[in-house]
Image (cartoon, rainbow, N blue to C red; front, side, top):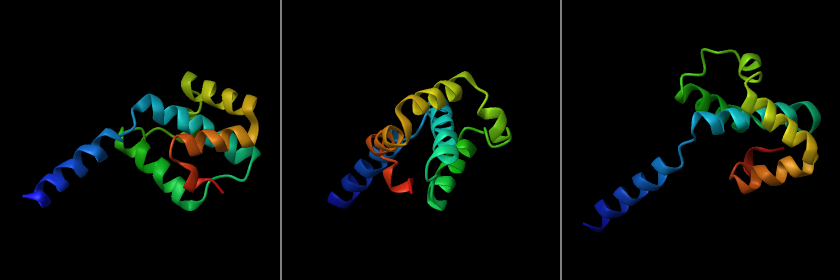
Length: 101
């Protein structure tokens, strides 16, 4: 019984971590900034971003087109304002720190 409850609890926790399309677009903008101006993402970070894009069926849209979305542009400008260190700090706060070089 304990194993079943633990399993259900884990499933509930993982399902709440799903990103919304808007969050995904914000990440696309920040990733664009970080890749252009800082150390960029490691391969695991690219895979995670691509999985997120696929999950919301955005994988059919080329990333340069996604980057033109107002949320991605806003995220890019925010990252530009805070610079590499700020973008890295925000990535760590959001739980994506392990994907930043």
